[in-house]
Amino acid sequence: MTAAPKACVIGWPARHSRSPVIHGHWLERHGLQGSYTAEDVAEDDLAAFVRGLREEPWRGCNVTVPHKVTAASLVDRLDEAAQALGAVNTIWREDGELVGGNTDGYGFLASLDEGAPGWDEDLAHAVVLGAGGAARAIVHGLSGRGARRISVVNRNAERANELASQVAGPVEVAGWGDVQALLVDADLLVNTTSLGMEGKPSLEMSISELPPRAVVSDIVYVPLETELLRTARARELRTVDGLGMLLHQAVPGFERWFGVRPQVDQELRRRVVATL
Ligand code: ATR
Image (cartoon, rainbow, N blue to C red):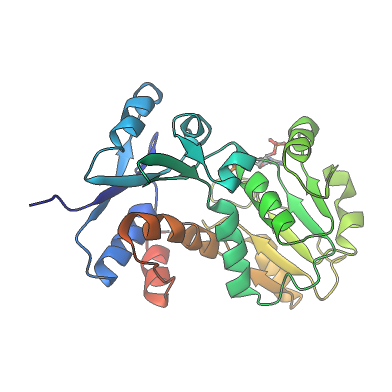
């Protein structure tokens, strides 16, 4: 008898990850034999763990903080996004090779497609707050969707410049002092910083300069309703919260490992929201 397929999320620590709830829901929903667990893997054990993924019953894993960059050097091949971002969040096997992918940008785009249909029809200017790993994935994704101008606003200018030089696209860098001027013609505003997250300072900025067509997105998901989104809703702007990106980024991995493309359904949302 062959063992049931296995996948997991690896991190240090991994136990805060919501991924087991997401993949557990889909395994149940599709009546599949298989498991998805959270595995604490220390830096020194990462290479051996990734090597182990080559053997059944492993199908692959998700990778979270702090292993996303190192994991990119431990696989045989990277997909286009992981190559561009230098970071991996999903690993699977294909034709005997271990492949590293990055689905964060995909997850972000899918969440906007769902939450604000048509948002990318005429994407002249996107303003992205932050320049960390999530910002990188989002800028790469927006560039792929044809954004004609992407402004990256960050406190640390060096980090923003590094992003702009490494991610291909019409990317420019700005400081927080420039934000108001940038909002005037923005079609999309995205917060990728940790500001507004539970336990962190809130994101205090006026969005009164945004035009009425603008979509406002916050990738923070604890809490789901951030000050930024509250303010945007009060202005009757379209908003997209951070839950969609969290759920949609998981879809490609599940499909690779278990052979079924899962849906981001209401029951999944309900189950994940209950853990927030
Ligand atoms: P992730 O990989 O999830 O994107 P990260 O790499 O820690 O997370 O990035 C966090 C982002 O939030 C950065 O852009 C950071 O700005 P700096 O590069 O200037 O540090 C931003 N951030 C965090 N706290 C901030 C604060 N108090 N004010 C302004 N920006 C902040």
